[in-house]
Image 1 (tube, one colour):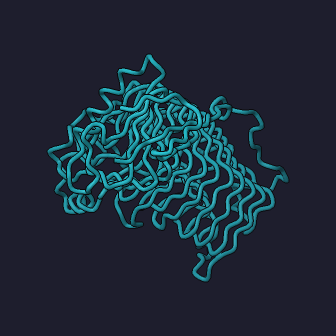
Image 2 (cartoon, helix red, strand yellow):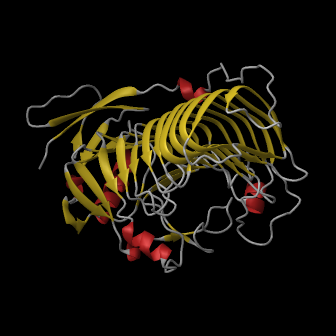
Image 3 (cartoon, rainbow, N blue to C red):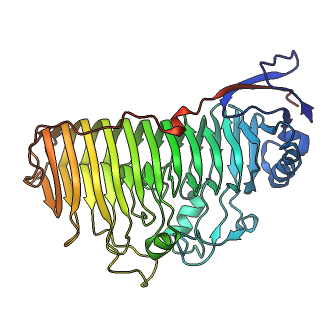
Length: 452
């Protein structure tokens, strides 16, 4: 093991690595120091687990970083530790094992009650951590290949007995960074921070076939103070899906997603949303700020999905600066997104949708400007849409706005919105204060590694 202090290190026999992170580390090791072999065939599961176990001992002495050097590193899932950085070299590819025997089963998320694919346990996520503080997953745009085709095939054929693993999942943790990586072909969701706070996700390239099942890009779930920025996502599901639990389980757990920043996002998702709120939103979603969003060939720009039985709320949502090309919907709000974990949901648990603000949108080649549907007896209030220019496609529907059980206003919107969004000549608001997560600044960290 090589012990280094932080700073810019340049050794004649070493490759110098420099990166930005929440925290720098005093100690450094290579995966090869623990028997790792980057030949694409040898299992490195034990090497990763041994390395992280040993490096966890430095948590009270400046922390440690594990460098994954150039090569192809086949491995099963592994758990992270606090005060720790996993750095994936730009020429490194981590290959996710397809051997189910390497994957432990863990209980469903408490705010969901059951697994998302099937009732009962779920496979542990590939890179997993719980009850951590100060953990960094980063690199020089190194790659994690989920090798998801086998999992997708089993899912489509009904052969999965348990819920598929996610690529990265961090639970009950704080001060988390996931950055500068390429994630491809995840078995299911790609990045899932859940029950966590002060999470920064930056500079990710996420790629999956557009017909791959449930390969959501980034799913902040019952998290507070999360920042997602500078990401490029091609997905078979929503590029960003904001969540907080499912029906009675999410209501009982009661942990909202709040204070969320999404900016500088590019998305391609032909069958799903650029930014979706829900449908699992039973802990509540509040104070979402999205700006500078670009998408092409996607289903919908902003989507809110909820249903009777969800309860809770989606409120204080602010979006500005969307550039959309070739979309089915610009805006889509659904009050009848009816999937439930079981039959025990409360039919009297109605969601509150209030304070949805969207401004400064340019959309071209659009089939339907907006479909906004609340729930009978549960009007979705406070919808504001301003300064929006939508150019219709040749296949555009004659009815451009389809609205029911909503109430709001609009201004300078073309084509003219429905009567439930009257022109009030106002500019929809966007917050001017700075959230605590946006005050987090990265440090310049470094390490020098001798390649074996």
